[in-house]
Length: 171
Image (cartoon, rainbow, N blue to C red; front, side, top):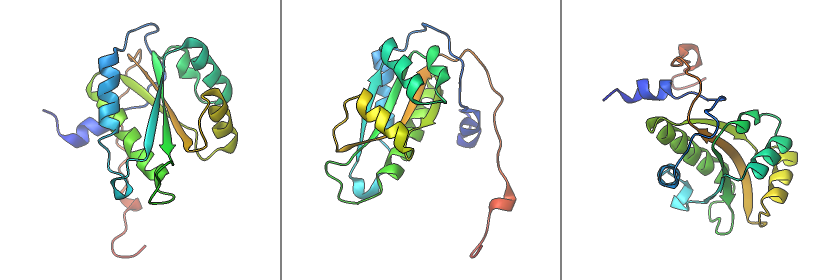
């Protein structure tokens, strides 16, 4: 088994997918189980997910979000939302959703799937578009959309380690 750092560095944002390649419901469930295993403020688990396979909806997302062209070939998208209906720890939902999103990306990479994280929050125009497209209640805050599919491109591992960005005790 490769070490975790090597694995993390091999996970890359994929923007080209094998069009029409299947991603099973079981694979999607595994991705969502991984996402929901993330830590959250006060363990409130303030997230919700929308699985989008409908081609018309994927096309609509591309019209709402200028950086989602990879959805043309992706098998599906997962919209990550903050669930504010029981928010005991105010304002932590973006951190909770980010942790869930990263877990999902890593699980997908482990399964041989490609992903690309496209931010929705905190852009008000994107949030409004997603609210309308997915009929989100007021208690749901769109955070990100993740393209998912079988990669049609291979990328080299990334090593962005920069010791100049590390400080000890003070800045």
